[in-house]
Image (cartoon, rainbow, N blue to C red; front, side, top):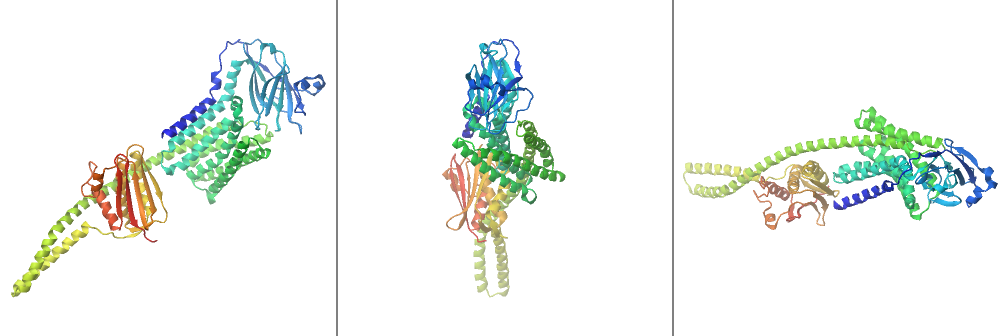
Length: 634
């Protein structure tokens, strides 16, 4: 538990470090001057990637510059051209700490020159073309020309937003307002998913698969949002390469986990379509993740990887969403309430996502996907509602199981009372039977020696009555030592699973969990109800001995002696050697209201099944019950 908490704390601190730097911006006296926007600039294509700023500023190339204004679309890049120059003139300003905010600058590599001197440079070994730059300038550089060299292998290159000139602190705050939303949302989703995962690991195994897939959905969405933010690429330049792959990792995890969640909630779909497509996604995502990790390890990116991942992600999003929408529509027509809830949230998310992807390609991939982030909230909200409904349903099941357990406990109490009567009957029968047999023998002797027919008749009558009394005593002994009736071939795995379903609510209320590890093809011969009664007695004692964070492990396997071995181990309070020796004795119990007959019945039932029970216990550590029963052939 402590190890998990430490890991979660380290992750939280790391995510906190992401958003810390800008909050630590130093404070300076502001001039009070308003920000100034530069809405016009010039652009020139550059065929020579080694060209210098002196060459770009020379009079011989004055005719190559083209004017541009804010609001115009990015120009189409000529073939075989991967570089371009931008230039603009700084305005006259009187600022305490002047700076430039350059937003929506599309390029992989950026170099900025003022007075023919390099003042900023960013070179990336990965194809991320978003740039948000805050550049400090001096008061002496007002009215000077700024040259920006851009380089990229993609189809688009240029500037889409006005350049803002103002106080550095003011521009930092402006940048924060625009860019920190993605960071905040992405980091929040990561923290939420990890917190949910931390909570879910304490739930029953049967719930974990669906809940874990929900955590992965939220985690992958947070990872994608976080990796798309220019903030991380600006502040953590040295980690830009792995940050770039965060989006690919998130996108490859998203759709498989979505389909896995749908499969767990709504089933495999018609003709197993949901399950089949989920398997395809798992295989495809595994290959893409392996490819991504290989490139990350090699420190380079292939152009084939970029093209393939872009097309595959878009195709999977469109096809996957269509499949889910069709399936959800079918479920909604069947008036499935959970399907209606999730359809509303999913339709908002999927509709925005599909429309944005289509719009992305309509604009020749010159469009920033951002509206889908808002659709996420409706989708996650619907998932949370589904989760809440499931938790409520599980709670109702716990209550139902508790009522069943109460009924079963009443039956057990009745059985224990019958055992008390049985024990008394056996004791009385044993004490009375011997004198009766002696009396019968003497009566036979007297009858043989008697010559009086009337006396012989009395002797015969007395012997008959003694025989009738002996038969009654035999019935008492049969009641005291019951034989197994209606014996059948019992599947150990099925029997223990039924017992687990009954006792899990009791273990949960006691603060413990039941873990089961069952071998296959294990069969014994016996009576199902009595066999379950024997195991329930042992497991119930283990549950009542548990403290907080307790567990009970039930294992079943075949040993070398052709026996079925059932081990029931707990980490409860345990017993000392003296207590172990008294187990199975009538009326011995460590419970305040116990009678001790439960284990006595268990011993007798297992004994009748030709098996044996052994207990191993250490005070303060726990107890292990080992049951051995001969293996029966199927």
